[in-house]
Amino acid sequence: MVKEAKYKMSEERLQELKDELLYLQTVREKEVAQQIKEARSFGDLSENSEYDEAKTEQGKLYSKIAEIKKLIDNAEIFKASEKTDIVSIGSRVTVKDMELGAESTYVIVGSQEADPIQSRISDDSPFGKGLLDRKKGDVVEVEAPAGILKFKILKID
Image 1 (cartoon, one colour):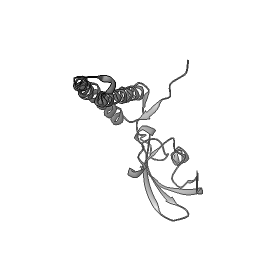
Image 2: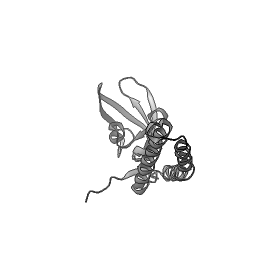
Image 3: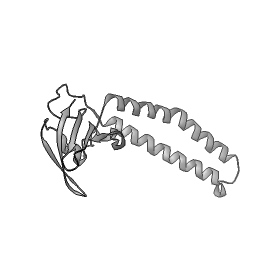
Image 4: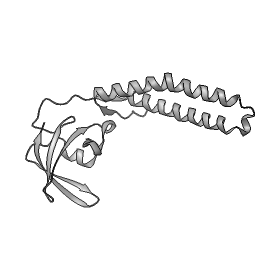
């Protein structure tokens, strides 16, 4: 039997998924069922584009519900470490790009919460993996398409 992958996430993200699942299974499912009912009333189903569209929407909905259930069932909740001397999931890390001299701050999160635009970096990303278990003052080398990038850890919160 194949072991399901675990999805690291915060308690807040798990609750967001549960809320979304509830919405999809109650409100959205009823809306799609109503669309199908209305489309059926238009007559011949073989040439009924509204019916085809509604059935496609239903398929997407059920697929999304299954995906969210899988995430919930395989969620691995992490708690932000109380330690601020080692980078872990939940840490806010300030780094300095050794080449450019620019400083940036990132939060290390599980893959389900990653949002690079909001400086939320996945622990599964090359950068996130490079930062994990490191200490203030460490220089981290990250392999990127542009080559090896070096960052110095300035602060861990």
